[in-house]
Length: 299
Image (cartoon, rainbow, N blue to C red; front, side, top):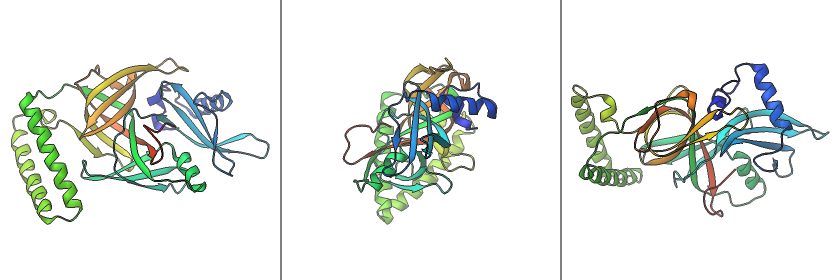
């Protein structure tokens, strides 16, 4: 059973028979998210069952000789609402199934970003049809099954301006360091040493969440799962059409990256509001937008 199925409103599915019954119902239901997609000159197919505003379940499989859909795997999804990053990425197929992962070099994080490609079949179609497969941007989303709301860190306007200016300089040095600038590397090293010293002193008297404003770091043993802390810029509540469960869709800013978080109301501690912060573990997904497309790519 997919761990993040409850994130899109199926918290009542707790056993394998319940899971199979739900998936069979989705296979027989009309394609709520649009017509069935099939890879070029292949019987491989994708069924998109949208169970709420911008979220649902995608079933991957193939059509057999009699035209019956044979499911191979499935995953819950959430469509992105904003462009998160314009950084390039390397797309690689998973070894055990027809799905794809992306390795994205996002300099604002200072490390590689790995996530599940939601529109992987579209990427495969473009490759097989010899279309331009250059990826222009990614819209990132995160499914969460455990999260909480934190109060914001109080800042004055001058502090916000200073932080923004410092962040711009830091990003410029990261970009220069990536291109081999030794002076930028030394500056970043000294900056990390000074930052560690400042945090060590402040932790003696302050709470950690008043020091760490936002955070993005890997968690667990799977490479596309992260722990995030980010400021909520927009929030709205949606409903799963099938179960009636309430789903929170939170647009957060984390280390300069904007992404959308999808979490079941039952799994969220606290009341989300703009300006507050979200803290939780997420399964990171991304939708690729290609060079010849306009706007945010949709599934």
